[in-house]
Length: 336
Image (cartoon, rainbow, N blue to C red):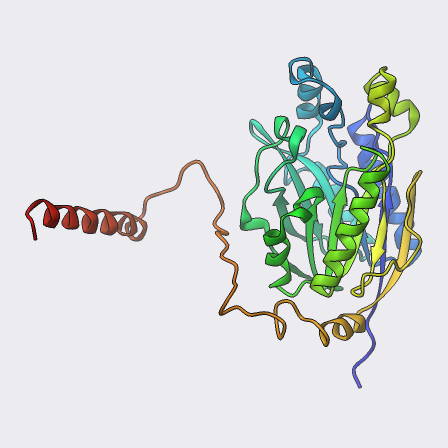
């Protein structure tokens, strides 16, 4: 009989330090240490938590948001760099898989980036949100499918998506086809009110059911003072409250512990990995319950770059179709 696999998981609800980039990094490190003392083996932080989610972009017209946007540029994370080094060391020290959301700066662009560190401290995955949502398009560039990967970690196969990427069924299915065991979901929290929290709950529970995996979901939290520092308009302040649902979901779509809807904190649960087989025995969306000869997914997972070297092989792949097209055109013009 195989040994029972039980993984202790944590989802964090936490406030950033708006004034200090280093302060937010320190909070992350302290929480990892706190979780490590409790035996946690995988921990998930909120969407773009370092230095902070750009809440200002949700309530501020672009024409007046320039100063805040530039401030975000100045505080954003270069990968690799001091921030990833600090988190890598903390992951290694605590023998813990760490899933972190950051604002990544790549030269002149910002990206909503998710990073998965293994328990050894190795950075296994850096992926970018493929489609920033609504107001976010004023802040971040678009990611590509090269990051739609599930990685082997010390505790199992782990994948991640950010916020409304969960409403892209093909993005979710791409992870399902890679036999994701633990899905890490990140949302900003402190936005839109209760309806956002309720929708989020449906979304993460549905993914758990459909994929037959565990879901660890983390949302951010803003204090009243932080909200007031973003805007002094009471109506706009209301738009930055609620919308938190830090939770851990089983492959059967059940909450494994009471979700956290307000305040800072951490939800911790044991993941009995045998529940994955229990669910997939009944319904495996990418196995015995799939019909790939009828419906299948095509993914362009080549990294999107503004330029590439046209080597001999690639040059032929471009030239041959053009030559064939010209040949056909000549036949038509000659009446053949």
